[in-house]
Image (cartoon, rainbow over all chains, first blue to last red; front, side, top):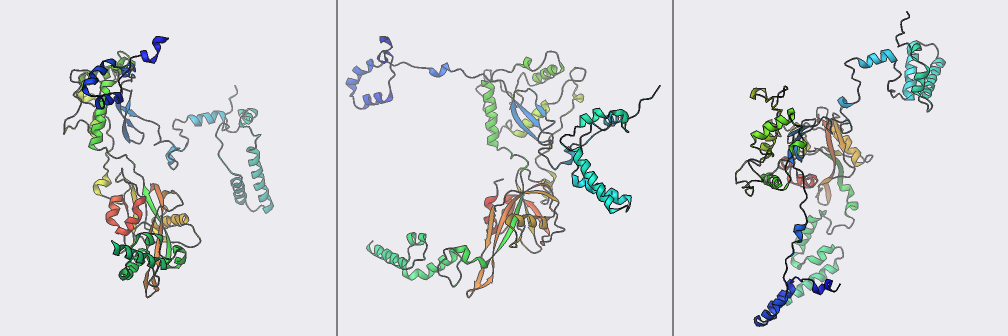
Length: 193
Length: 342
């Protein structure tokens, strides 16, 4: 314990003590004082290891609209072509019509699916009650002047059926199960042998 | 010394007698009796006083409301599409940093990225051999672990750090050097990588100031002109029924047509320009004009002045520097602070 006392530890000369020696003490007396100082070098900095970093290349990034920039990366490839980014994503390009969710059915797979299973799996098209009513009115007008009362009835019925359909209890999957393909007009009937 | 002290005392007494002099005049200005007239004229000019007025009114805007017309305007801008080109100093700084990094990082272990005896592995080996065993692609012949590793600085006039050269080197390196059969491709089989479009567009070369695809790294501003008039931002008188931002939207539609996808950034004006009223014998000759500009951005579309109901017949998309040359000095001075540097 006694050997661990601060006085026993090697002491580094500080600038303040050195300056006092130089300025105040005359040269003849300083020679008798200096041997009492113990000068030891410390290399604390060498104890900290340099962190190991992976090798970095420079890479050209090409965004989907053709604009490029360079960045540092670990990847050894010189060119990275992005297929989906902010330049062709609909969230960042709200006015770009080509990015909207449009049904592309070049191979006719969707049509084939519908031919077999009906349209029960289609996404609902958004129709407001007003539109439904207007549609019904237009249909009634096209049907002839059968009677104004009937027209209003039809409009009301259309609106009601709309509410039915988008009621919270409406379940498209349940509907599909209960009315299976055999009573669907779109579905090809299996041939009886 | 004594005389100046006396005269300053006299001036202070003179000022004390006139309670309407503003605080800064009272403390800093030194009024001599014989220059009172000249001083008054200077004050009148500074505060845009009417001939009958001798001191500025305290609630300045309220008492002279009737002498100004309020106009609303819009500064429609296109944001820069590209970052600016780097300066030669920046280029050489980044180049130096990369070479320094070569000496400090761990070595590249290509077995971590390429499976042995695959096409990608062969491709890498071919390119590595061509670079003389150097892993880095764009740093020139610099061996970071070699005897001359200290010699990492470029000499004056070297083009190695040029960003265009670096990009071209990297794109050259991106070419596939292996055929589909997994063999080394012959020179005529190598398909070059498509080059990115240059910064300078066709409109830049033609200096077509009506196109929006010019000066891609700077902001463009829409300026319009009436026949025989001066180039300015679209502006019009307001009715008392509408707000500044509503008027700005109306003016934009009226001036440059609806064929633009625009966004008015805020409801607060970003700049204003004042034309002072003129008087003759204390009667108003022409009203002054205060124009408040709102900031707008164009996202898509183009200005179309054929249907313009505000009488504008020409338009230009210009940068800040070009506006400075084109516009009258006071007009540009009142709007320049809302413009970004580039």
